[in-house]
Amino acid sequence: MSLKSKSRRQQWLMLSPAILGLSLIVILPFFLSIWFSFTDQRLVPRPIPTQVVGFRNYERILTDDEFWQAVGNTVLFAVLVVPFQLAISLGAAMILNSKLRLRAALRTVAILPLLLPMTVIVAIWAVLYRIPNGPFNAVFQLFAGSGNYVDWLGSSSTAMVAIVVLSAWATFPYQMLIYLAGLQDIAEELYEAARIDGATRWQQFWNVTWPGLRNVNIFLLIITTIGALKLFTQIAILTRGGPNGSTTTIIYYLFKEGYQTQKVGFASAVAVMFFLAVTAIALLQRKIFKNEEET
Image 1 (spheres, rainbow, N blue to C red):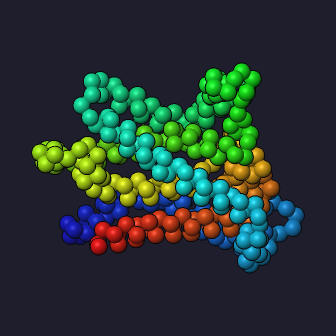
Image 2 (image 1 turned 180 degrees about the vertical axis):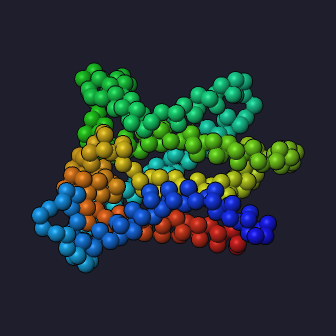
Image 3 (image 1 turned 45 degrees about the vertical axis):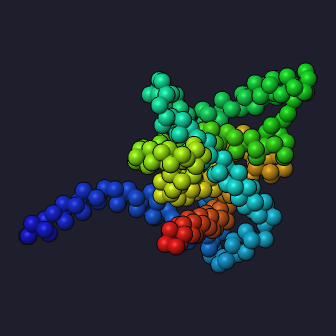
């Protein structure tokens, strides 16, 4: 056996546990979902055997008003949370990248949300949103008067906004750390040259910082959008899709159909459609930015 063949064999041996795990956890369930999506499979076995129903599940999805409401809510959440989250992440990164005293301590504090499980964060924010005397309503009453309050999670007009604010705060440190790494890769000489030319801080940001973060922005836009489309935990704990379905997302809709009503075949069809949609969005974003870079 040649040295090259031996080296390749060792590489495959080292990769085999990861490949096996990936196949069992991701690839196999995905293909099972495709198969189940063409059947009337139930979560709990029935005396009646599972039957192939063709595209009936997909037809039902496309004619279900609740599904389209979930699609609209998911898109709305992504449109609201992605720019908001990236903006506060970039702002925090720029502050922590400046020459501040106790900069290391501030960086430690800024990443604390990453150390908490999402369920814990949601429980904390549930207290903040509590009615009628939660901390947010206490602040609201300072301006609106005692006895007034906002049902942050119980009103269709505020529930999604409340989820957006919670979600942006819970996960922005991840984007912030990536932005911070990107900022540190921008040469200081570029800022010095801009200052010599008399550029203001805004001009330095627009002509030096923003172009220097191009690849970082593309990466974060794609992963943040995908993360937003997978919203579930906050909805499952705080609103359960309400009020009046105003916070039902695709993943929560899938969960409800697959586990609460036990329609595994129907839920599998939703999962397949969701996978194809997310993949298409990611590829489209990548292609758009690639074309802009080439021009």
